[in-house]
Length: 271
Image 1 (cartoon, rainbow, N blue to C red):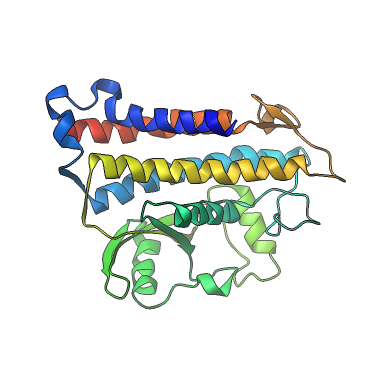
Image 2: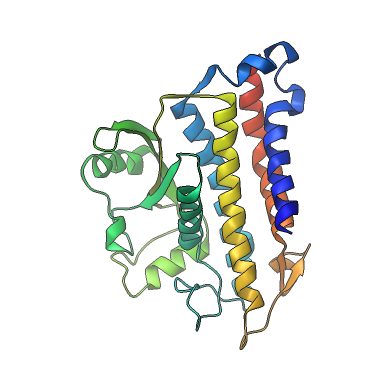
């Protein structure tokens, strides 16, 4: 299965460079060495991919899964907890995968009312987050301390599962969240101010691999369930019953929902 998923991820990268017309042949050799995108463009692309993936996971897996009796818990990795990761923990898993990747892409989620005090924004980010809450527009800046180009994007309460979980959490510092509220911001970081086509695709592929790593970890967790019923894993989703999509099916759905805009951006820039 892991070999198949690597093939799918590779196919995604190739698609991003060559589908819908792709990189013209006379530019193919130079596209990988020229700085084709600003870091702001690339971080915005990967942020949009993340929005699609998290929304799909939150609504189609966690939200619908809970209606079928599936459990999701912040301590899902503990041996005595038989559950899947909550949306914020799913994102944390992606961030962990990125840290292990050779691609220097950083990701974390922060807020002014975090469940975990360590995720509270401070300094420059706290200042910029105040603006994000007003207009929901991304904020870009260069972090002088870390020497990293940084982008912050609004993280919205997009599903009932998000609102309910945060409002009822025993460590919550805010219990009146509503759908559509700006709950926090995803922060992305990269060391260079511009990227080549290859570097851009590497960033997108590294993110996609991170989502697969976490989702497969969840499926592996299910295999070890002893006291809980195991959902059937295949090509069906929780809205159809006590089912979960396989990693291949989940990734394929993400690709169908997110890749068009990303590919369009890559193709337009290459022309």
